[in-house]
Amino acid sequence: MAPSNYRASICVYCGSRPGLDPVFAQSAAKVGDWLGRFGFRLVYGAGDTGIMGAVANAATRVGGQTLGIIPAHLANAEIEGEDRSDYIITENMHERKKVMFMNSDATVALPGGPGTLDELFEVLTWRQLGLHGKPVLLLNVAGFWNPLVTLIEHLVSMGFADQSFRDSLEVFDTTYALFDRLREIAGDAN
Image (cartoon, rainbow, N blue to C red; front, side, top):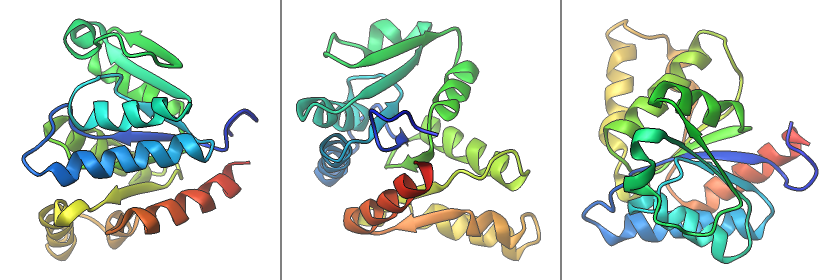
């Protein structure tokens, strides 16, 4: 349960690169701005680059609280001195993912690469195994995640995952729909 100084704590998984379409960074900035303006704490990978930097910079610009979690081997490469509410340096990537998850009420995946996929699949698997009941949300910016959703549905249709695995991933095509769901989560978290 989130402390009273923010509505809920939302972990955002996303790329440390900007991607090729400017809409990815624009959507990330919109998410960060919204989280900061409406009293949510952003938990993220602590980097100041790419999509990750866009979401964190937007949250910080409007006075939002952030909690960055980064492993020591990435700290020098990805943190460039932006003013943040708080950050934690972990020993390794595994510990980073655990700390991010433990400090959140829900997770949201924005466009990203292998690291984002790793983080997303870990929390989905934990949920399928009954290790948590936290919402796992996917912002499908410009159809970026369509191939992944199709792959997950294929895994289900081929008998390698239960339908509950697919059902545990909530997919949103617009930031407005995502924001409505985050408001619901804040009501659940408090």
